[in-house]
Image (cartoon, rainbow, N blue to C red; front, side, top):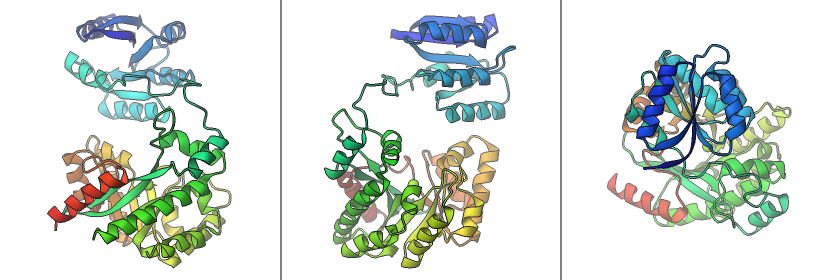
Length: 397
Ligand SMILES: [Mg+2]
């Protein structure tokens, strides 16, 4: 198969450049540029950036190592995918991978030297057919007017990802995740619309619009005998709204449901100035009977001190620990300790991002009683999820 697009290979070893060049040729990549240093790589990148679809870089290079190169590429808004390659230990490769994702780079994976054509092919198969980021001006801009209209038309919908019992596989709940499936220029992901919603000051509107739909979907599930809890994500903006708890419980009670039927997932991803306000509204939710869940535990500001300050009843371990636990001993240890922390505080412990049978074994052995992830199901529209839930509930009774 012929691959259009250019690959930029960065390595200070001629031999390594030749080897990768030959492997790329085997895989059908004809346009390959070689740079023997980070500096040379940046010059080539600036000249050919439009055609470059992939950067393969060595980590250890004399003047500018692969880590610095990644930073420069991130500053240049690298759109291409990236593969790291090195002779250093797995632990350092993993840290480098973490750094790449912190820079927002599309890292396909890391390869230990010497890599085989087969390993390279497996990574390159993951290159998206079209660049993952929208070109600037490609889609219609997410102006406050457009977002308001989409909210008014009910275009933001909850999709549901099941949470299942880690031992029985039986569904115990769903997490509602906001989606915008029918935008005029194609589906727009939450990574794009959520920041725009926040910037437009529409976080509350989105939250309550999702809540209303979740309540009506839950009522339909109850009518069919599907008895599960629904988790809803609360943004910090909404936590700062002191009338939010009353509004929320009103919608729930009007729908014939109880606060105890809902889990409210809270992530604190940034330092908050008005922390006491958020603490008040979150504590009130808990008093009303909603279950508070600390989301993405172990990342950002979602950490130990929150467990002391707020009445969390559920702890969700961030997917990054789950995914790395199958590869790295350190991540596995942290996962186990986070789970036992939750258990010791009498909290439910949920592992997010479980994608393989091996990861399921690890999180179950670590003491996570609930799991969520592609291994069981992706987020699904209401009707698809209903089908999934009714089949699962029947076969696992
Ligand atoms: Mg969540």
